[in-house]
Image 1 (cartoon, rainbow, N blue to C red):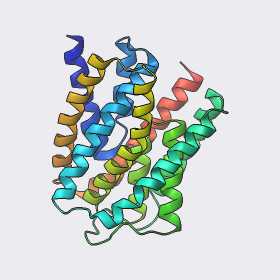
Image 2: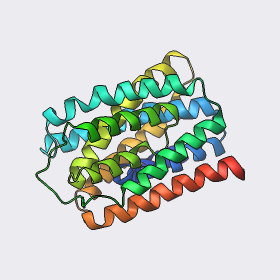
Image 3: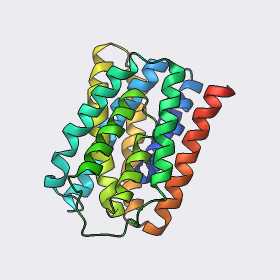
Length: 246
């Protein structure tokens, strides 16, 4: 029964995460409640996110929703940001990490109100400029330092850059593959992975990613920004509750 629940957790979390980020709000605390050790829970999430994110990106890439020219440079920037974030996190306390994560999410919430982007610009490609480079590197750092909320922050960035929603979904999934891949290898090498748990979560996540990307293809872009604002606020509330209440 526990393995069935893990599949369901992966399915729900990745469906939500594909649409607006924030899947970690569901998967990580749910796994802890099931008694999965914290490092094994993080590792399972990283492994399953790497695989499921690639499957949803590949679906959209094959349909021509995103091209390789605008995707290729995103990967090394995200990876370098993740490495830098992991190195910085090693010298920060848990409380300081929470403060930094809150600042990142607060900035993301403000960005969601700025600019004229409404996720409807079907022809716009991801620009290579100071906003995209600094944004992707900074969010990569956030993922390396903390993790949950990375997808939501990326959606806010791509909305500010005035990309179409379905292109944003594809690029968020690719950035997630980039940032999770190194961490997944690290957790596998360290022996922290509980494979039956990880494989059940992965099975649910792959299914959820495929459902999420198909819902995204039909979702009215006008609904995206309100959903992102709600997800960002939920992530902030979770952080504050963990820091000051729990």
